[in-house]
Every structure is written in C-alpha cells, then in structure tokens.
Length: 359
Ligand code: SAH
Ligand code: SF4
Image 1 (cartoon, helix red, strand yellow):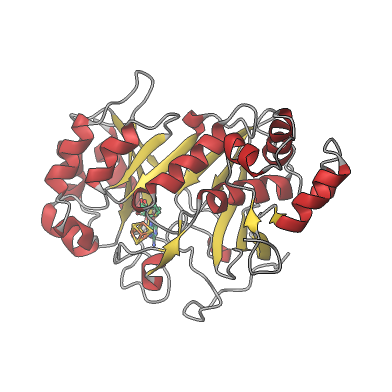
Image 2 (spheres, protein in one colour):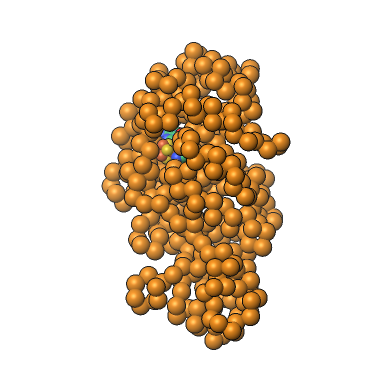
C-alpha cells in the first residue's frame, strides 16, 4: 500500500531479500544490504539518516514506505530501574514491553500478541482475550525501540530477550520465528539465540516445529500446577493439551548439548504451593534436563488468588532444589505493573494503574 492510501508498508520486519524486491529496478544489489544494515544494525528512525543511499532513492522510499517502528505511547519507570513501555502499533493498537537493567546484562521482555487467547486464571493479560497476532516487524520492533531508547548494543553488553509479555508465542509461531531470525542476524542486531527465551503455556503440536527452527531460541514452559486437575483449573488449555502429554513432549524435545528446558511455576497461596505440590513437581520434572523458576503471584485486580508468604516460597524451593536447579524470580517493576502477568493495556480502563513516572 502506498502512503496516502492508508498505512504505508513498514520496512521493519522485512528480510534483506524482501527489501531487495521492493527497491526500484536497476538499483544495485548492495543497496538492499545498505538499507538492511541501516534499519537493524544502526537502528535509524528516519530515511533521512540513511545518507549512504542516493537522495533520489531515499526520497522515493520516504514517499512509499515507513520505517515502521512502534511509537511510544507511554513509559513508566520503577524504583528498581525497570521501565515499562506502552508502544503504539500502526493500526493504533498498543502492546507492552519491559526493560530490566541488571549488572552485566539487560533483559527485554516483549509481547507476541495483542492480548492472549489462552485464559489462564492468574494472568491479567487473559482478561483482554486475543485482539490479534503481532507481525514479525512488530515483535522485532519492540526490541529495536527499547534498545534505542536505552542505548543498548548487543556487542557491548549482554542483551537477554524473553517473550513473556502479552500473548502466547507458539500460537503466533511464524511471526515469532521470523522476528528471531531478524534479531539474531549478525549483520543486523546480532543477538545470540541462546539469549532469547520463548515461553509457552504448552501448545504441544507447535513444540516440534519450534525445535526445527534455525536459529532456535531457548524454550520455557509455564507449568504452574502439579496435577492434571489442578492445571485444568488454572490453565484451561490443559483440557486440550493434557499435562501428561506436555511432559511427554518435553521428554521428546531435542535439547542441544548446552541446553536445558526452563519450567516456570507461579505460586498461588493455598492452591499450588504445598510441600506435596513441590514433591509432585519433582516427580514430574526429575527425568528431564531442566531448571525451575518459581514466581510468587503478582496480584492484580480481577485475579482471584493471593501471593504466598516468602517462607512458603522458600520451603517450596528447598524441596525442588534437592533434585532440580530451582530459582525464585525476583519480581521487577511491581510498582508500575510491569511484572509477569501484569502486562495489560491500561487504556481499557480495566486495570487501574498505581502511579508510575510517565516518561
Ligand atoms: N503466554 C506465555 C508467555 C507469556 S506469560 C506463557 O504463558 O508462558 C509469561 C509468564 O508469566 C508465564 O510463565 C506465566 O505463568 C507468568 N504469569 C502469568 N500471570 C502471572 C502472575 N499474575 N504472576 C506471576 N506470573 C504470572
Ligand atoms: Fe496467555 Fe501466558 Fe497469560 Fe496464560 S499466562 S493467559 S498463556 S499470557
């Protein structure tokens, strides 16, 4: 689509060969390479910055296309340095992404869908339902936007990316995998696939396809329950994809020599946080090469669960840790609703935000 006749085609999200196909006939092949590197390696935000292209070509691109980075609608800064972004997409919909600075590495948590269709009972995003899938450009664009805003360069400091924002990545797999290819391209952003983690609620039929991806990120599974019944109640998707089959799919999952699966487990007070639950988690996961991340529930309006006290979290961890590496994830940006499961569009009015610091 041309500018003036609606939304212009976004260039972010296109691979080099696709950019080449867009260029006017007669342009030398290296122009596509120059454009690609300007977009993904230098992260330009306007065509006028791509001075290596002849000005006639730049003007033509400018007239017909947009760079297509998501725009910042709001930014909230937490006391712990976490920054939560509300990013506006070309059609006006918004998604959230979070920047978490740490010693030695920075982590970006990004979204893969607007909302989520999976309906987990402890998750705020679930209350939105699914509005739509994100495109590869919108997924990679979140990383480009946050990296530019925070001055991050993968060559200088480790950047970790977790696809744990809004959405179920395995229900939008082609776009997720294309975004990964763009993020990992050494001629572009140059992020290592080992530093990208895709988290799934357990869409079993997509796991084998994910395993064949090249490059392939790490895989995390949101377990969140220790029995079939409990998981069915907390994550209704379990009716379709049973816990027993999920564990079997994890057993069959082709890990690389350096790799292990990560299991995420949200602890809900009095629901799935007992010693018996911890022992059942060990029984389920002990045969797998894996680690477990415990997350004490981040509460929110409309979420009918409570956070267990720290002693309960510690007792649960102690039991699991005897058999499996087990960590407690420190909540980040709680005061600005940036923590896991709290990413939810705010203009809907369904969530009242405690005041952050809009940037
Ligand atoms: N849909 C994917 C990825 C996004 S959710 C998935 O479910 O894995 C990312 C993580 O946040 C999941 O591990 C999920 O279990 C966790 N989570 C969801 N709601 C939460 C809440 N209220 N408190 C803590 N963690 C939560
Ligand atoms: Fe979707 Fe993940 Fe939230 Fe479940 S926990 S509703 S899969 S975002």
